[in-house]
Image (cartoon, rainbow, N blue to C red; front, side):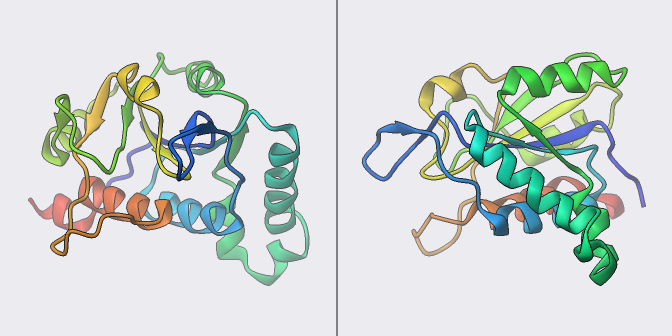
Length: 192
């Protein structure tokens, strides 16, 4: 299976909206850490960055990751250990870009996700072709009620939204990340 080590994931906790449309820093979810890192490992991404400006939330992520990669969790569930080793903690998106560039890559192009259609949407097919090259790409997911408009406008690309059949459109970020990775790197893509 082809591994896309030039595709990185970032889960942004600020700036995001709350249910009232106010800009907040959201709390880290243990489930997001476990499920997104497992999807990232399954599809062969380079790393999974958890981005929050809140020091207590960064410490929480580090404690959870440490438990599963160095503590009893590593012995209890080696598969989970392997997945959670992909997690890196960062204060900002700029820190993520710098970290990727320090790993011998150039600065990554940013691709944000959004539940709403956007005038600059690119298709999954287009992005799947782009990530086959050498240039690194950073696939960015938002928490809470999504990334702010300003954050989205600063991205290089905006990935087309996931649209179901019912009109209901509020997937968990864990679900969205798994769907997006499968559309970009799944077995169907390899056979195409």
